[in-house]
Length: 170
Image (cartoon, rainbow, N blue to C red):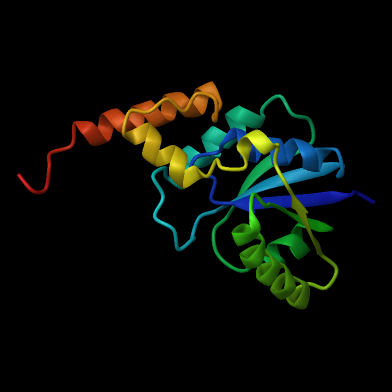
């Protein structure tokens, strides 16, 4: 029987903190599926296809990792169908834990056989959030310490696209 986990998130963009949590999960589980939320309530910079391409590129050298999309429905149902024993969640600070704890209790109610595993990233990534990386990158800041070179290239491409878009308040 496989010891499989899923690692869900928006991953907009996929950061080195996300990669660190994924690598830690691979030390515990035989297989980890990275699951991108398509119908999240978040406004994303990257489309779901761009995020899938980004994550696939970053994890291409890791064994026993796949990337999939949760188009709609409940994460607990996805976990059940996928045969996952655990849901991996990265926790950087207490604020993250409070939200993730509530979600883990709900997922346990919906699918009692699944366990949520909270993993902390390396301390150098504890303040790295996708939203901060997006903002700094779009404003021209240097984020290369926090993302894979492929992600850096995609962020630069988005920055150029947004910079060349006609202003709505001209």
